[in-house]
Image (cartoon, rainbow, N blue to C red; front, side, top):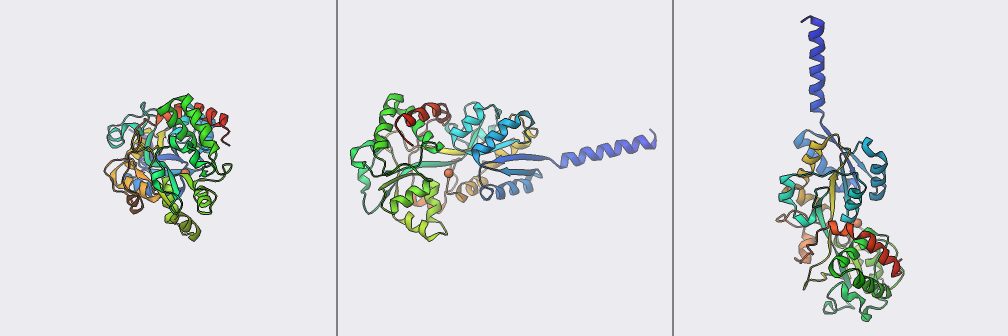
Length: 338
Ligand code: FE
C-alpha cells in the first residue's frame, strides 16, 4: 500500500467518523420554541445527536412538508390535535413506526393504530363557568349544552378551529351523525355571540359578562391562572372548570403529538427522540410547561392540574377524530356555526 493510498484511506475513515459523530435529526414543530427547545437540548446532550429545529404554524408546516415531499429535510413532525396528525397521515408525509418503548409508554387510544403518529401530551376540552352566576349542578354533558336554559349564554370559538372540529368528531363517534347534527343545530342557537377569538378570549368574554359558559382547552385556563397579565388572572379567577360526561364516556380529550416523516433521512434518530420525549422526566417537563397532562400514566401533574382534580377521560381512539373530521366540518357548517 503506497503512502498516498494510505493517506486517502485515513482521510476517508476520518470523514466517516466525523459524519457518525455529527448524527442529527431535523424537527418541524408547530409548538412554540419555549415549549420544546429545552427538551431537545437535553436530548442532544444525552445522546450526542444534534437537533435542528424549525418552528412554524401547524397548517403552514404541514403544507411545507407536503410540498417538499421526498426532498423534505424534516425527520420528525410535531404538532397539536389528533385531527391535524391524522391530516398529516392522510397527506402521506408520515411513515409508520413500531417501537416497544412507545407502545409501553403511551396508552393505545393516544396513538395511531398503525403507528403513523404518537401522542406526547394530553389536553381536555372542557366547560368553564362563571362561579357567581352558575351552579355546577346545572351542568352535566356536552349533549346537555343544547338545553334552552343556555340560550345566549355560551361562548366558543369558530368552527374553522380544529379543537372544535375534533370535539364534534368525538360526538359523532359517540352518538352518530344525525344526532350530532341535531346537537349542533341546538348548540349554535345557544351562542351568546358570533364566534370570535381564541380560547382565552372566551374566558375573557365570560368574565366581562358576555356569556356564562366558555368552552376551552384546559391548558389555556392553566396559562391564564399563571399569567403575568393581571387581566388574564382576574378573568380566570371568575371561572371554574367543569368536567363534562363524567357519568358516561368521559370528557373529550386530545393530544399534541409527533410522527416520523416519510422523507426521514435520520429515521433511527427520530425514533430515539420520540422515545426520549415519552420518558418519565421528559413527560413531567413537557406536560407541565404548557399546563397539559402527561400522556404517560404515572407521571406527576403540575400544581395547577392537581387543583382541578382527577377526571374520567373519553378513551375513544383519537384517530377517529381525524376520520370523522370531514363530517364534523360539514355538519357544523350546516348548523350555521361560523
Ligand atoms: Fe392551543
